[in-house]
Image 1 (spheres, rainbow, N blue to C red):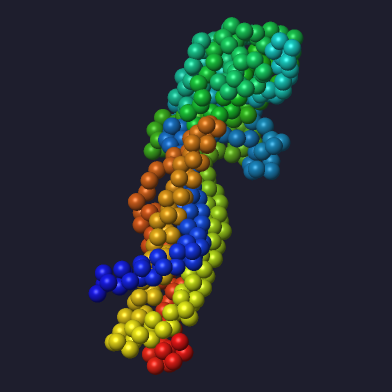
Image 2 (image 1 turned 135 degrees about the vertical axis):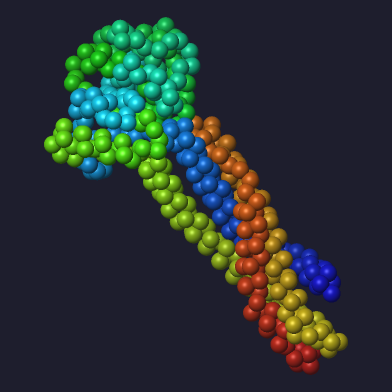
Length: 396
């Protein structure tokens, strides 16, 4: 009887191809939107987690200012690096200096970002996935007129691509390119991809600026003691500054903040996409009501030859559920394809977006779509099941 019920429900839907197809469309769009957004959101979450794994759970980042508003005006002190290095539990610390300058190559001029580094800390920057050499050599402390350029900087900033041993002009000085870096392994190193990197002392000499650290990256000896190291650094810097005008963030804290923001954005987008499912449910409700009205004679005949109210209810509920189930499967397939295309586009743009097949998402999509179909079809099905066979045949 169950197989006959499904067979009969499928045949009824097949006879109304156009109406069934239009009803499917609402469910397909809703499920596809939700699946695409969830898959892309999960992909970003996985990418963030992987990036922070590369950064290391024993990494801390020191920023100027006690909050977002003050960070634009506050500065770290030059002596802060030595203060941090002297703290118990700190393996190493390295500052990053930033300056925006006009640089020319041949006849072309561009405003670019120049990063100053302590050349003694190459190993730490490589370990953090920020400064990995692709070709050429690293800088030394005596390289006052030599620079590294990021992979994207070399390709995109000027009309002609930059190569090793070429010269760029900055403040009237000719700087020789001795190395080109690889694409950074995580987002914190992305600034190196689009910048010039040079010895920070040479950068100060050429610009005449007294640069202060833009960021200080710290590596703790033991990842289990990161919080204790953070507290020690905080106390040391507060004593040195006389106030708390800095922020110290662990990699795990930044990861949690990033994931919570992504989760909130994803929740809002999924909620908006779910509105399509409501529209799809209304479409099923309308279709089933029309089916009941058009098939009054069929219902009358079924009940006249012995069909129970329960059987009629099951038949119409099965039809509604099948619409939801088929729409859910097509919607999931379409949504997953959209997510895969989004992953390819993001990867080509330099964003590592990981899209993977999640069986639970497939099952959840099918189950939810089937549930929406059943709920939407309940009232029409109940109306059909309560029809009096004599009245139904007389009306026909």
